[in-house]
Amino acid sequence: MTFTEKIKPEWITSGVNQDAVDWAQRFAKHLAPQQKLDRDALTTSQLRKFFGQLRRIEADFDKLKVEIPLLKPKLAYAVGRANKSNRIRDFYERMEDAFKSLDGEKDSFSQLINLTESIVAFHKYYGGE
Image 1 (tube, rainbow, N blue to C red):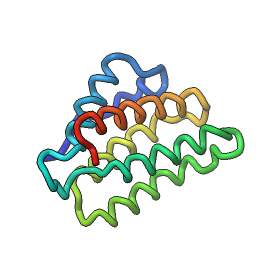
Image 2: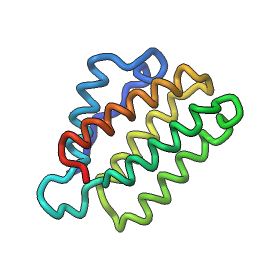
Image 3: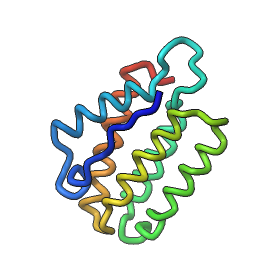
């Protein structure tokens, strides 16, 4: 099953609202294990690794913002390593939508972090390992 709901550009450009949080909840539930030993689920370590990269860039944004375009190929590499996991591919595709909405400014990057943090939290709630 593929997750088809896209990130709305205004969540990145104008701010995360209740609609974005509700979307993050649905998306995280989709990414989390659906049953015990679900090998297609996005793992907590995969998600936290990406989130950690966002936080590292945020910590010294002016110096590290040049690394933002490299987030996409790093995620693509994770998809390639995941042996055709549909859910990590779904995560990659939704984040790709978010990257398109970034304008190079710290405010939009902070909104991406807020949205991703919501996904991380709900993923853990729904049993992300």
